[in-house]
Length: 196
Ligand SMILES: *[C@@H]1O[C@H](CO)[C@@H](O)[C@H](O)[C@H]1NC(C)=O
Ligand SMILES: *[C@@H]1O[C@H](CO)[C@@H](O)[C@H](O)[C@H]1NC(C)=O
Ligand SMILES: *[C@@H]1O[C@H](CO)[C@@H](O)[C@H](O)[C@H]1NC(C)=O
Ligand SMILES: *[C@@H]1O[C@H](CO)[C@@H](O)[C@H](O)[C@H]1NC(C)=O
Ligand SMILES: *[C@@H]1O[C@H](CO)[C@@H](O)[C@H](O)[C@H]1NC(C)=O
Image 1 (spheres, rainbow, N blue to C red):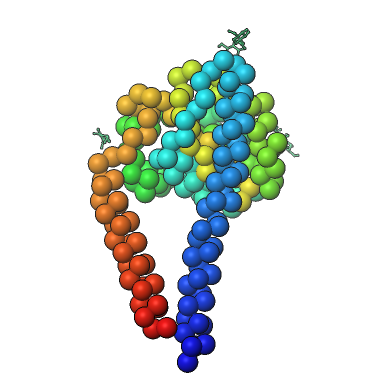
Image 2 (cartoon, rainbow, N blue to C red):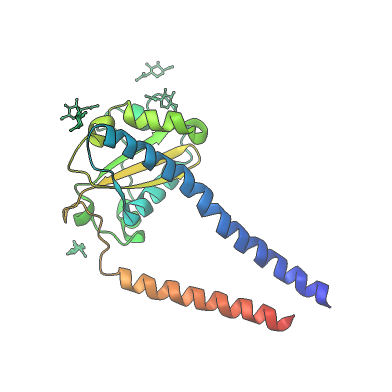
């Protein structure tokens, strides 16, 4: 009897472990790049960029859009300025991250494609390419970084209302739904405990 409950519990356990591990390993690559970029800025006597959670969310969504494109000499930081593909569902991505176009206008989106996201190549794709000019710009004060497969996206944010990526008011609703989700998860877990 006990073993059949274990069979039910096991996938749930595995799932929670995966959930715990996965974001951490992703976050490390992105945090490494932010550290590298900030070291670069400190060298230039500029302030370090602060992590911006909403920009990070959008960067993750964009990396997800890019992920199936192969790296070529015309993708990512090799892109000729102004030829970056435009996403038809960009407004949806903004909504997903509780943003609207008025707070992202002055932000700057920088995608790069690097096989296996090799950390030193990733950093040099930002600090030794056309992107370095933006990294060297005092108007940017924050950054959000997301990555998927070979793609990494850095979004620079400002501290003005047209580029600070402040969440729109619909954010409160999502917090409620998140708490609701945690409640459900807790009940589910308690249910399993009582079954055992
Ligand atoms: C940074 O500031 C220091 C001290 O003020 C100065 O010696 C150095 O030349 C500056 N470096 C750059 C890149 O501006
Ligand atoms: C990209 O590579 C292709 C083939 O290797 C070459 O023909 C083309 O000129 C390159 N484009 C740029 C922008 O370097
Ligand atoms: C950027 O990454 C590509 C790999 O996609 C690499 O070939 C290239 O040398 C890198 N560029 C810089 C400036 O580091
Ligand atoms: C950064 O910007 C300053 C001032 O605009 C300029 O003097 C410097 O050469 C730039 N450095 C790099 C690495 O782009
Ligand atoms: C976007 O969000 C900001 C901050 O919540 C708000 O002030 C602004 O009115 C919104 N703009 C639009 C077009 O929804």
